[in-house]
Length: 239
Ligand code: ADP
Ligand code: MG
Image (cartoon, rainbow, N blue to C red; front, side):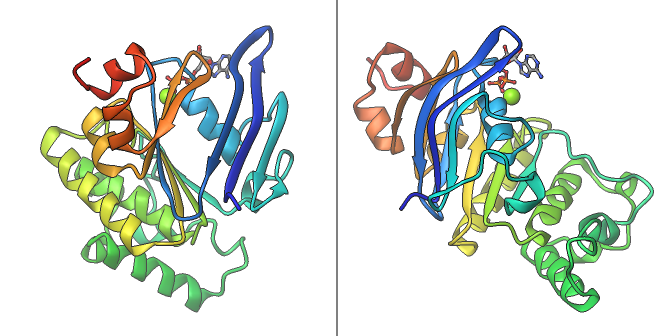
């Protein structure tokens, strides 16, 4: 059974339809990458899955269960954005732990989770610092660490590397690939417009265009057998 299933999902903002009937199945533990031009609906699709936007029509299922109107906090999802919104007056530790007490975790469990996430990302020596005492790359690691601390079953990334310089982008990309290997049961959906990121991280890539799915497949499938010129252009195969 698919972990996440979208059935004819439509999203309109007023009269403007931006997601135009998307069908997609994502397996548990899969690393799915969404690519497509700016404005094609990648972020909107992530926000629908996260519950930050409501679906206009169609269905969203998690493990076969309808999730259309389930609150974001009950979906077991953590999201990392392009701009790492850390609380400036809180330490790294507090940023990573914030909100978790409300979610019912004990102080001990919370502490263990924060330290485990910090170890995974090699930021354990930064826990007492404030965000302004960190580099951009370190801040993005804290944002990823905060998401890991929530122990999500689904991890959503919306262009998480696009504010980093080239060297940090590579380092953080490798870090995310490592996370995927360490968090085997966690489904990851990752938005990018960077071909290298898509090709190196993805188990499968979903190419979007103007609110619709053009093609879904492994990087090799899309590269060797693009459905059309649009996909070929995006994935970079020479035809
Ligand atoms: P992408 O992430 O692929 O660049 P988005 O999902 O952000 O694209 O946006 C898809 C389309 O939906 C764009 O045309 C955008 O202007 C529109 N859109 C996104 N959010 C809203 C909103 N809250 N209200 C109105 N239009 C929106
Ligand atoms: Mg976007």
